[in-house]
Image 1 (cartoon, rainbow, N blue to C red):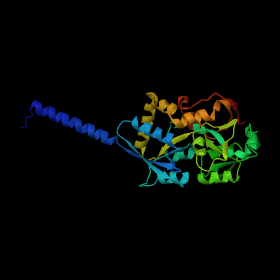
Image 2: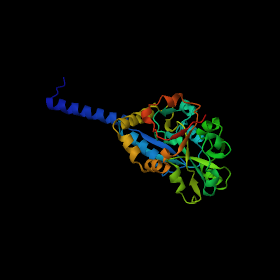
Image 3: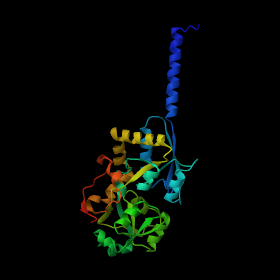
Image 4: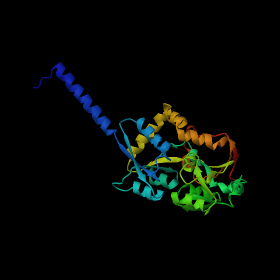
Length: 298
């Protein structure tokens, strides 16, 4: 018969508790490897900050590794995400029904829908020529640059817009050579992008903004429900404790986007959405709602 003293029992209990805590923390520790489109951490600094915010507000000790994927098309990145022993297990991109079906989507928009507000980058020398654009119908006569495989292409084409598509880097060269007339960019992207060397002759078209109920979402493989749940819980907690909105309001890219885009002074040209069932289920508290002049698509 084994006898255990009170002191021994206490020591055993403590050891078991510490072991349980260690196992619990280990079970909830994950390394997230996020693929970065264009490989540009400066452009996507805000989006990366949201991922870190999610991990900081989720139970457990999680780490984030950024994997630059410059020159890799989005469709290829999504294919890689589903491969065994893939170099990444997380990617953020614009919503599409196909991506939602093929992968697990974390249903919280990363930029509160700011990605759905698009400004047009144009040649500075053509500002007067393009300055009369005020409605969707006015846009029909002009060609718009967009990325190969970008999911918003379907939305724009459905609304009658003419698109020329290519790789991201090539689109800036095409705009410079006037292969198309306007290049649509998110309000949180365009001002950082125009500060890049060699773009002194590019400007933002004043007066209007294209608008759609749209945003970046986080995607993981359907085999990684654990990663999905960590990210969702972390973002929900960040909203509940105020950390998400504090980060949104204080991040320099968001501040710059809202201050420089001045959406409240622009006419919004809203596009009809071909797929709204999933986005329509997302609570309104997760979407930014600027007070502006509105021009409906139809």
